[in-house]
Length: 114
Image (cartoon, rainbow, N blue to C red; front, side, top):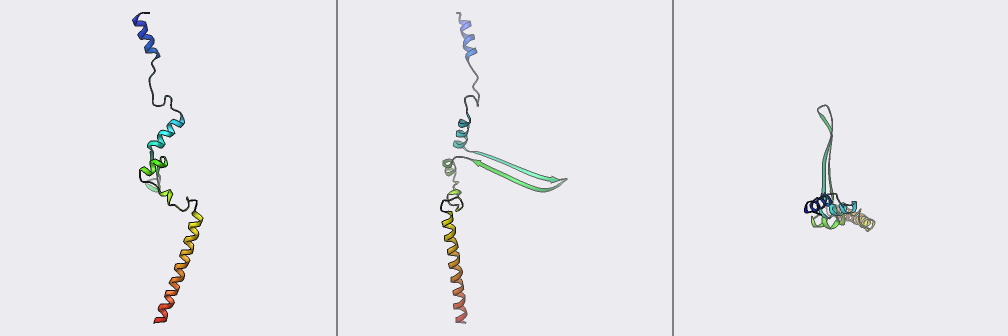
């Protein structure tokens, strides 16, 4: 083989690297969750020149760790997403009832003093 034929065979075996080459859905999802992705868009519904409806969509896709790193952790304190949600709602209702009864007692005491 000559030097020229070696360089031709080496160049034909070389492949162009692309962003999607060798990436599976799992690889892409892992990258998205690791870095995070924001999708934003606005939808407007108009008739003639009159705007009837505007919807603003903001979506953040990230792993829990990445979200915490960005300072986003609202799900940790949301009683509807907590395993203790029913317990917290019951405690809240009991506290509201106690406050109402104390306010009634305070009204009665004030009326007696007058």
